[in-house]
Image 1: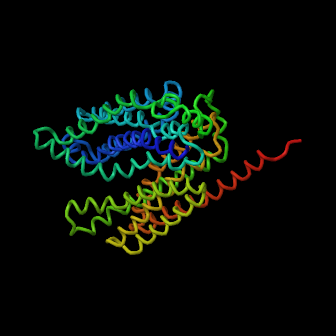
Image 2 (image 1 turned 90 degrees about the horizontal axis):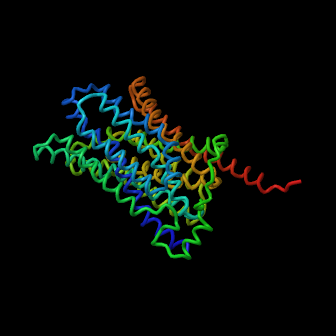
Image 3 (image 1 turned 90 degrees about the vertical axis):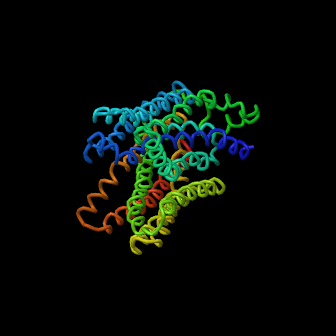
Length: 426
């Protein structure tokens, strides 16, 4: 029965969650495509644009715990609708900005609305996922991140070109057109997403009862949040591991423009496909490794081994220099990173209780999100200080090796906790 339920959950809930994460990624990153004409029209300096691009993370980090508390209070369907309408409205409002203040305010609102999205989806799906299907269920929506890269660039470019051809300002047209699906999806969430398995009309009574007895987080058992979980080593180590895995992606992103510049003989379409190749590897690694982790029930090696593979491949990309061989190496980097990320959430959530799940998941995600603030800055400083790619590359390699070491530390902590829990009491 669990296999049939897992398939239903992935298609009935996992696919909509992919859609929401895909839309959030598009609405968060599309300013990079608008930047050239928007900055010139509005007179934004590179520093002003850079601040506006990064200030989103202020709202993103601040909003995570309040967003999770709201999810627990009002349920998934109303929470998702509210989040999507807020970030869709703010993202669409970018089409009407004329000042820096408007730019910064809307970016903070987008971050605030999207801040709790990823941990909220993990928390929500935990009541539909069994212990054995954790990796596959949690990683399935994460496919939205590499898909957003593959889809976002050509879509945004096409919308800007189309807007100009229709007599609109292209970048303003793009913001409106990419925000509309978010608003529509937010309204659809009210009718589509069940708050609990009991409300899922596509499950029969036997399946609902089976899920209630076997889900990783059984619906209705969350009475209060246990904040003491933040002091447990598993949360700190899990957060550091997630930081390392997300930071590793910046090594791939950092190298990719250099590789693409070397492939100047490709057409625009061919360049688009070549640039998407590492992110295709990310998606493939994420999907297949998560499924294999669920089939075997093993978690640690499914994270540590791909992390080391990504580290070796990144070293290879650096050694061979820009060109087709480096692009192939970056595909392997993406494959390893995706595989490690796909199996990740099944590891720290294994020892979480209903009272600690929400607090721990958000805490871990905040640690990981900090990688988006810290790693690009460190790599930029290293690149400027040395004038080459060696130190930035070795920095990311060290982070990926550290991920494997952290997996070993988490495994040791788990064994100690389980041994303590099973020890006879006097």
